[in-house]
Image (tube, rainbow, N blue to C red):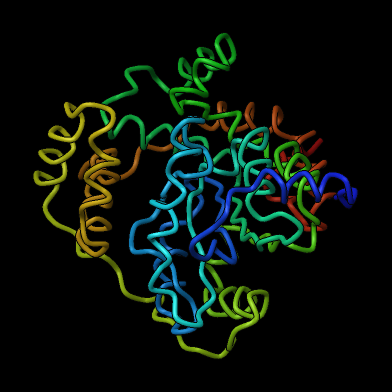
Length: 316
C-alpha cells in the first residue's frame, strides 16, 4: 500500500516546484486507455460543480522533459476559467507511465495530493479494442496474434509506439507504483462494466468522492450520431495518412462535439457491415491465462471480485 512521504521528501518537493500563477487540477481521470474514459469525460463535464477543459488528453505530465519544464503556464491556461468549481483533467495515458508522471505531479503538488479516478476494463477486451483502434488508424498491419508476438519480442519499442496491447492491461503493477507516490485513499477505482451497466450509480459514487452534489442528473443516454460506413472508411483513410503529430493538433483545435463524432467514425472503420470482428476464442483463453496472476494481484489490491476476467474453468 501507499507509504507516507517523509518530511524531507515533502520539503524537497516544495523547493523544486516552480511558482504557480494559477490552479492545478483537483483531480485526474487517469485511464486506463480504451476503458470508457471518453464517455466518462463527457459525463463529468455536465456537472455544474466540475470544470474539465473541453480538450481531453492534454498530455502535460508525460511530455518530454523540456516541454514539461517550459509549458506550465500553457497548461494552467486551461484552468483559468475555473470559478469555484472542482477542476479536473483527463489524460488516460498518464496511468501507463508510473515511473514518470506521479513523480512530476509530486514536484508540483508538494505536500498536497490530487484525487484520481481510474476506470479499468477487462484486460483482454481492452487489449483487443486497443488493437482495433490501431488498425482503424492504419498503423497496425499485423494480425492480433502477430502483434502480441511482436510485443513480447520488442516490449519497449511497442510501448513507445503505443502498441503495448498486453502490457497496458497489467493494472496491478502500475497501480502499486502510483501508490508509492500518493495514498490509496486518493484513488477511486471503477470498472468499465460499472459505468456501462449502472451509469447513474457510478456517477453518484464519483461525485461523492469529489465532494460535490451526487444527485445532479447527468444525461448518459445520448448517443453520437452514426453515419454511413462509407464516410467512416473515407475519414479513416484520410486520418491514416496524416503525420503522427497531426491528430493531437487537430484534437486541440476541434470542438468537443465534432471531435467525439470524428473519433466514433474512426472507431467504426475497424468494423464493417458484418459487425465488429470477434476475437478468436483460443486467443482469448490464452490471454486470460497470461493475465491470471496479474488479475489475482489486482483483486487483492482493489478488493473487487474480478472472476469474470479469469480463465474459464474446464468442467471435468
